[in-house]
Image (tube, rainbow, N blue to C red):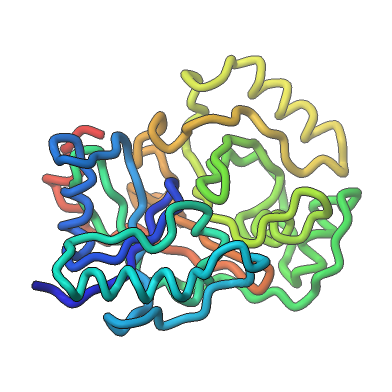
Amino acid sequence: MNDAQLILTIPHGNVTATSLGIDGLAKRRSPGSGKHFRGRSILIDLACDGVKPGFSYLDEGGWRDAQGDSVAALAGVKAGSRTKTALSSVAFSAVPISAFQNCSLVKTGGEVVTLAAPRQLISYTNHGCNERMTSEQVADTIGQPSPAKRTPRLYMVIAPIQFLMLSNLTPEEYAWYATHRPGKMFRQVMFTELGHEEQHIAAESRYNDAKRELIEKVTKKTKSIAFEDCINQIPFQHWVGYHKKSEGGLYVGDRNGLSLYQFPDAIPHAWDRCEG
């Protein structure tokens, strides 16, 4: 039996103590198992010594004992259970990004590919934000050169909620804005850039109207296209960075900075060919 570990599942937002490892948990969750979840997911191995979490959960106001529940779940695995729930929901915003050991993409059938180790793209030191800022002002605030030309980018936000949007902001700019903007602030954010317009999710007019608004309004930086279960409607092959033609992958950030998990140099052919 493997050592007990803690695994965060996105987008479901739960933490599971398990002895199965990433591959084993992915198969256990797939259709055909006793307790299965349909659709794609992201499994994140969290820092853990097998007895307790190797990190402190972020403050949630005391409505649950995340640390104690995780210790109890790990003890259950040590006692013989293959899986024990540590946190059943809202875990993405409770687990600090610094606790992430690695990230794996999982297809519906339980097939796994592990992304490369994270690379920090930027640290944020200036935290003053207002919604009337222009894209250029955001770039200046985070100390980044503004792109010579701004073309609306299509992003899929995966956590803490799922939605599709167009934005004039680069990934570094968007992560800062998303974790600082008043009234719509995320404690942490996970997203990817897409290379296709995904016309099956929203009408073409939604994309065209969003592009027009981003071009015409200098203070408009993001425009939502659709709020729904996006990760299961957009194949991994459509993520920027999958084919190594442009930099991209899975972005994870908070108010302190942004990191990028890129696809491996060689994606296994068997995983690439699997449905889901």
